[in-house]
Image (tube, rainbow, N blue to C red):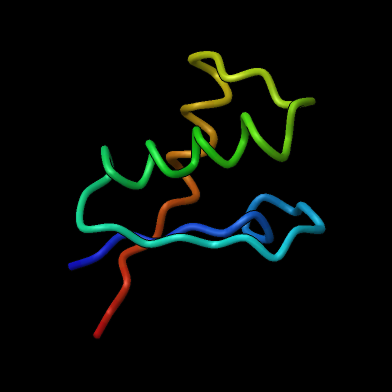
Length: 60
C-alpha cells in the first residue's frame, strides 16, 4: 500500500503532496521539497519524527 503526505497535513499553506511505495522513498521526496520550498524548517531528528507521524496509508 502506498504512503502519502501533504504540506496541508502539517498545517502549511502549500498545495504540495506526494505518494510513494515506501516510507524511505516518500521521505526522500519530502526532504527535496522542504529544502527547496520550506527553508525555514530545519530537518533534524525531531522534525523528521513529526513529519513521519503525518504519513498516511493510501488506499486504492
